[in-house]
Amino acid sequence: MFYTDNKLQYPVRVDSPNPVFARALQQAIGGVEGEIRVAMQYFFQACGARGNPKFRDLLMNTAAEELGHIEMLATAVAMNLEGAPLSMKEEMAATDRAVGAIMGGMNLKNLLSSGLSAMPVDSDGVPFDMSHIYASGNIAADMTANVAAETTGRTLAVRLYNMTDDTGMKDMLSYLIARDTMHQNQWLAALEELGGMTGAFPIPNSFPQSQEKTEFSYAYLGFQADGSAPVPGRWGEGPSIDGKGTFTTGKLQPSDQKPDLGMARPGSGAQAEQIG
Figure 1 (cartoon, rainbow, N blue to C red):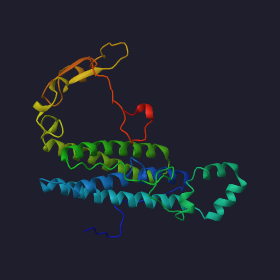
Figure 2: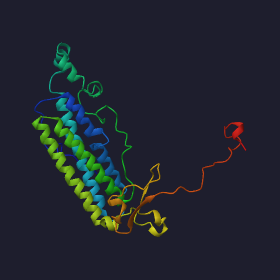
Figure 3: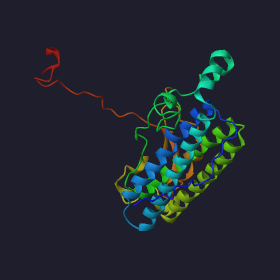
Figure 4: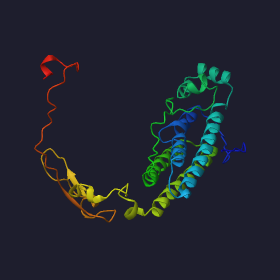
């Protein structure tokens, strides 16, 4: 069950409405770094979470919070678009080239399709299609994906913060940035509970590493055309990060096998010369 109290999670204030900034905010709603992405990612991870129920609880609580972030941003988009009557905007655009250029940066879908309201789209008006939702059923893999999701989301929020001089928008974004900080840390804390780098990795840790081609498990391989070995960093020497091996650096030697698929089957639609 989901409930609402009809209140915003955090106050939203727009001091100087700006339709161009409204378009930028759409990226935080429906972009690949946006709140729809993380809300749905955490929701579906929670729905498929097995094992200790506290991880499902963590995921579902955070999914609910992200829905509140969508509401905040949608409100901010509408407030930035509704700052002046449409007729006034049209009149100003017709008489002032500078204003016309500014309005030209507005996403017209917010006008034509939603009546000056937010939409589940990115800053170019492309609908979010759920292709960036990662819910693997492996709790450690999901937590790792969530760290990445929050880092890109926080990066976007910081860029939006630096784009605007509106004090109300900066206040809202500073809240969202703070929550991204917490979410990064909570997913890392969950990984720590799952064993951290030494216990959770490599993911899935249920597969016996003895069944890997172990000579390649911790080898940093170069693919330079001249056959030289790559310059090693921390990833090419010393103990592996998971503590289960030692990094080496080298160049990969090609196998003797050449790809040969043989002749095509009769009836396959290939040319007569291809069919054996």
